[in-house]
Length: 302
Image 1 (cartoon, one colour):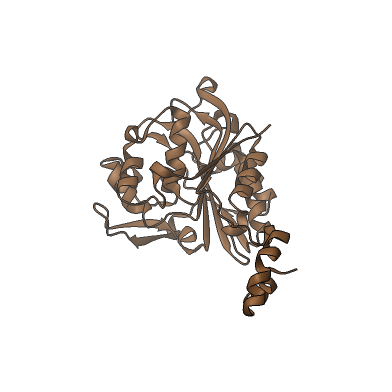
Image 2 (tube, rainbow, N blue to C red):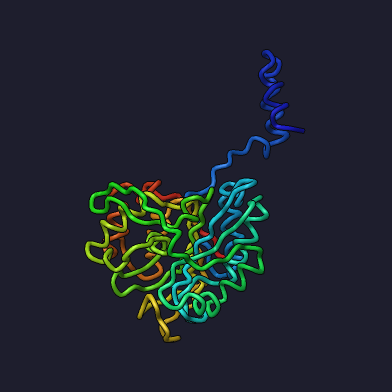
């Protein structure tokens, strides 16, 4: 029996109103309020289990991806490192997310990143290219002629080149890995968006917090999924020493990048005051939710 039939019946006179409580009690699931949490923290699982649980708690990827969408899945592929060194996003997670996008009805899923090391080696040795292609994604290396000047009109940045495929996507899923960063303390969702920025990214490091917040305000994604299956605790963002890798088997997801980043600080024992650019993002209104009263669903698997 369809919910709309009940609603129609309930609207027909006092008899319908009288019957409504009994109808609701008989079919409670049809009237259940679908209020997914603002953020999800899932731990103690393998990458695919972590992702699938988080998406289920958020009401399914269909809440974010619609039929016919062109979706960009934006992992961190910046470094010529194998997955075990936690410099790049977990390839299993990226592959499963691509599959989930197609299941939700996506027309095309694109995967790319502006790398710091040689792009071919980064794509290959991170295993992300292999996993994403196997799942059906269009995987491409960044082309310099595909950056488009985007008006920013921020406090510091007036315009900045952003990758055209990112700007033209219907939906964007930001998939950073949680790791230490020598300059920014940590790199998470907000900083992962630097991978679609052109120009001289080194120039952003001076007065970094205001600059990154200016640009990110214009390019915030649909959904942020933080890969914390392994985290890099030192010598980031490149890493290279297995002793600096911690197996935390965690994933954090939210439609609000600032909220996801805020939660991920707990992985490193940091508070908001410890990471200037995330604090500035919160102070400048980039958070969709009240960080002090964030509705977080925590799930422990196993």
